[in-house]
Amino acid sequence: MLTEQERERIRAEATHYDYPQAACVEALKIVQEGHRWVSDEHLKEVAGLLDMSPEALDSVATFYNLIFRKPVGENVILLCDSVSCWILGYENICAHLKTRLGVELGETTADGKFTLLPMACLGTCDRGPAMMVGSDLHRNLDNEKVDEILGRYRQTPEA
Amino acid sequence: MANGSSMDKPLTGDLRSDGAVLDLAAYEKAGGYEALRRVIKEMTPADVLKEITDSRLRGRGGAGFPTGQKWSFVPMGENAPTPKYLVANADEMEPGTFKDRMLLEGNPHLLIEGMILAAYTIQATDGYIFLRWAYKLAAERIVRALAEARDKGYLGKNILGSDYSFELDLHTSAGRYMCGEETGLLNALEGKRANPRAKPPFPQVSGLWGKPTIVQNVETLCNIAPILRNGAQWYLGLSRSEDGGTKLYGVSGKVKRPGAWELPLGTTIREILERRARGMQDGHQFRGVLPGGASTDFLVEEHLDTKMDYGSVQAAGSRLGTGLMVVLDDKTSVVGMVLNLERFFAQESCGWCTPCRDGLPWTARILQGLLEGRGRPGDLERLEMQTRMMGPGNTFCALAPGAMEPLQSALKYFREDFEKLIPSVLSHEISC
Image (tube, each protein chain N blue to C red):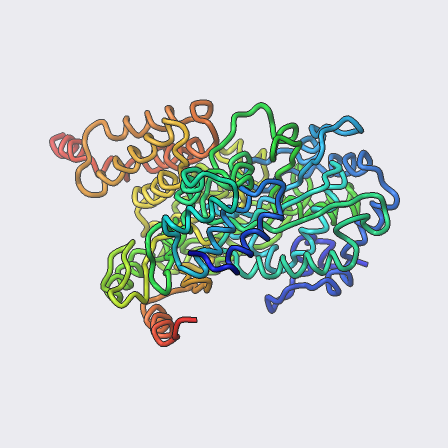
């Protein structure tokens, strides 16, 4: 179940538009803020709040790279795999992350701390390779910097 | 009064070197909202449209459509449908492109003033800034700037005491390249999948919720206030081409100093690569460049003196696109780079039309086969067939034709790199 506060926020978002459906992406992001991903149950609840069928909402939810319809870890790592970062060493960084985390792309670490996902261009091509961890952007990556960044998130207790 | 740097560089001249945002006070001190004050008092929408048309401003998002002409298609007058909408396309996601981020993070009021002026011109009452999810810092700063502008009476009901009202909101997306396509963006704003729509009707007539809508790139909109502050003639004088203004150019890849810079429209590729990006990194040779993002044709050494403007880049066989270049060096695999690009397009295809949905993964599989030693005779011909099948006119939107641009030009300029990966060609050469 969504919390009353989440339902209220979703209703408020819907007032920004002439049609409530227009707030659906925002609503799914509100769900993810509290639950990290969008379960079938939450999807149905949101659809009800926005006068949509669950199927219509799911067609939107599955369209977006950043709406997760499967559970993800505490920190989602979004590693840019687009052309400039690829030229600047994406493959090495990716291999290093996989080794350090013990997961493949698309997987979550056993302790639930990290999910590793490839991501299309992050718009910071002059400072690649780049990745985001949650909302934080990290650029000019090399293996040492990746280790240091992972260490920081490992220590941070969940907000 | 505007200071000297913003007269040469209307987009970035006022940006702070420490990366901090220009707040409302700083923006006003640099001449911000002067244009709005004057326009709202002294100019009719038709006057503004004429000034923008005379400035020869063209769209900076990739397609390069003349801005004044685009706005002229919006129905005007008492019988025009309402509400009308203005949308800023801030879904910057063309690989290799990082220009709008700079403007959104550094000077959000420049966009907001430009949007109010553009909205006034088409008499739009509602607007949205459609922002990509990844630009978190930009989102924070836009929200704050919108509040500042509302408090000061620049936004909302009866702007600066006039009878004109305009509401502007931020919409943050959730990541999909298709949202940058004009009609896909409109579907996304309506809360639907960002599939493209058939044109006609064009959005200027029937856009968001079926109402007249202008969708315009961030950089384009950021030019509006400076043009109206300083005049179309001044704007034309900034350019080294037949079209007006400056352009944000940028370089990524194995160059010494990657980055983005505002320069006169029509600055040459050589000047940008050598003077701004300081040339190739030691131990790397230049082989080619995608001049304006992932969906533009490669240009090579012989094109380095091409001016980076709409007509010149087209004459050289590519497109200005977003104006941000990705450099190919001699240590980077051409086929690997093209595979990376085609995988991106295959993943980001919305799947709405068959050539794109099936053709792009097929293309990526052929390229991957080449790199994994599974190249077969006829592969290059199959790739060339794809470039024709997914060429302009065969697909619903510009995604697949754009995806074919780097492929077709790579096959033209770097053919030997592909041929090397086909065993029978090798053995044929050896047996000769």
